[in-house]
Length: 251
Ligand SMILES: Nc1ncnc2c1ncn2[C@@H]1O[C@H](COP(=O)(O)OP(=O)(O)OP(=O)(O)O)[C@@H](O)[C@H]1O
Ligand SMILES: [Mg+2]
Image (cartoon, rainbow, N blue to C red):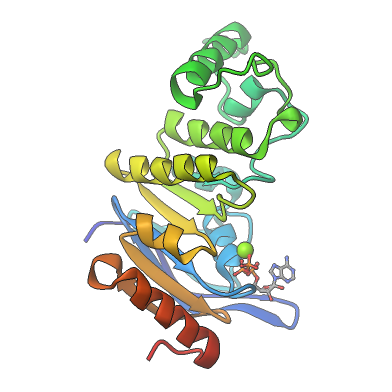
């Protein structure tokens, strides 16, 4: 099996709190992995390690079989990791076009930024990808005036445009309307169709079940178990989640 990402024996503490204990977590090429677990289970901590935001206390991280030392946010992005979540993913005070090209600005061979080209590309993406029709939104619009769903559209477009290999979605449906939620779940399916991989975190078991190939359950910093969604019904998954909450075990 080809793995985009392998995390071996990852441990992470914040002072007294051990957020992750000997976690082994893998994402295969063209696999959508759902990550479930109660509040404080360690899901966000795990993905923040993948995105280079947190450094693990111990353990190894491999991208496509290559061990990566001292993973940082720019390194993770260079390896093709994109993150989609409503808050924090975008620079609120910056314009739309700047956000699309943040950290990957287009410049000519003399190193001069190609502002006009970036704005034109942004406009094209708005029309073709994001489906924005609102006249209030244009490449020069400032992100903080966008709705939650619009912000997510920007993060998603960026992930697609730059051909992310691994898209991380941490509770992306939080605060979205039904219509926006459906669009988002379809986007996750598009990642699969495009041959890429994703890690999808959501408190809604049905959302996770409907897009994931495999579901991994975290409980108090440890992996409690995993399933292939094809081997289990949605009701069985719900049942197992209740059991984990009560006993800390899936059996
Ligand atoms: N920066 C931090 N400083 C101190 N403690 C932290 C920090 N980040 C996470 N923790 C702690 O680590 C544990 C796991 O938190 P984490 O955010 O990973 O959980 P989660 O599974 O994402 O929960 P939720 O579903 O509520 O988002 C919690 O006890 C949390 O308080
Ligand atoms: Mg979280």
